[in-house]
Image: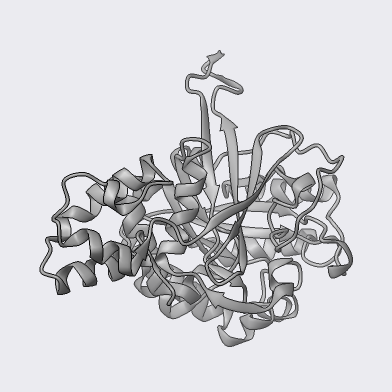
Length: 374
């Protein structure tokens, strides 16, 4: 029999209600397990006596284990290879950012090191984006809400997590129910991650986008756009054929009207494919009625899996200059973290690489800075 994760809130709540036990014990159980990850249920103090055999027969304190921890050469990126109960693997990435870097008002900036966790929502992915390593795996299975939350539990053993982005393996909105449940757990006690510090990314699952704000108020939305027109988008993202760009823009309009939040637009820079000056103008015109932050992502090589090349540094900068200078659209360039451990954007695919020689020490614009200073 497969056990449920203790962090699978719906399953735990259902079992407690069936047994006539008050569900208010759930945060108490979670808090103890988080502080004592190797504990047994009978070690948790002050629970009703009937609850102990129930927990032992139905649940595990963790259904996943950390198989491998890889550190980047610059020590700011950590990739966790997590083994699930069914034997499959997913990856989660911790990215550390020092908010004291740079100057503010002519003075050193206050703050310190803060960490963002990139979590996976599926084993593999159905979307088959041609530039993404995860897409090459095909789709294996959804993660349960507990398996998603356990990535946060594992990462929290290494450092305090301040921000969470659903930008790991899988399409989060294709696993909508479990992702929503996991986010609600992360927002609640004892994790208490602010919803404004959680970002859910999607290639554009329109029905889910339309209801996301209602189910998760204040959570941020990021859209993997990657092309300014439907034809090119379908070429590099085959599943885009299911959702027209016009309808996607309509759904984003609905989301923005409800949320009154800026939307993150992710745009991977593929040399000679989508990085031309005219495409920058077309992208700006597509988004001119929206409040957005565009994040330009230099393509990360994925070995023999890819037919693409990375845009030149000059090409990326010119693309940004058009968006910012001509159209006054907030546009950032994502400096890469974790390339040497295959932990950068688009590189997540189950593997065990050794440390490489690529130094990922370039400073980045932290997700939290984008949320605050837009």
